[in-house]
Amino acid sequence: MSQEREDELEAELSELQDAVLEDWVIVASHATDALRSMQSTLSWRITRPLRVTKTFQNKVAEIGTGRAVQLATAQVARRLRRGR
Image (tube, rainbow, N blue to C red):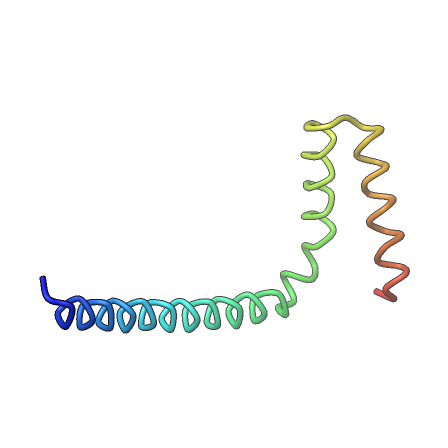
């Protein structure tokens, strides 16, 4: 294969990779917008305590009550420091 053909193929590959990357950026942007939209709904805000409780239950089952409480306490402390 000639050097010229290799250069053409490399350029084509680069263009294809750029196109795929652009597509992924668009998809990620749309997904982020959809997630923000969902999280701003009333039902999402109302069910937050249920999701937090279920997450804590899963963590207790995974690592035990004592460690789960330590992690939850640390997370609350971080959020309080950030002003959330």
